[in-house]
Image (cartoon, rainbow, N blue to C red; front, side, top):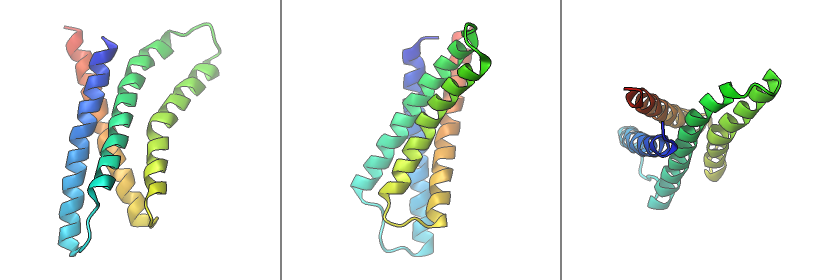
Length: 136
C-alpha cells in the first residue's frame, strides 16, 4: 500500500468527520438555545487539527506494519515507539484544542473527546478500507 493513499484517506476522512462534528455541535447548540456559536477562525483551527491528526493516523496506520517487522530491538522499544506515535498524533491535538478554549468544563472536555473519537474512527475505517482494497 502506498503511503500517499493512506495519507489522503486519513486527511479526507478527518475533514468529513469534522464536518459531521460541526453539524452535530451546531444543531445541539441551537436546540439548547445558544446565542453564540464558534467563530470561523475557531472552526478553521479545529478543522486543521483534525486534518493534521487524520494525516498522522494515515502515517501511523502505514507505519504499524513496519513496527511489526522490526525484530532487532526488544519488544518494549518497539511498543514505546508505537505509543509515542499514537500519543503524538491523537493526544497533542486534543490537548491543544482544549487549551485553546477559554472555558474548560466537563462538557467541553466530553465534547472534544467525542469529536476526536469520531475523527479517529472515520480515519481508521478509511485507512483499513484503503489497505484492504489495495490487496485485491
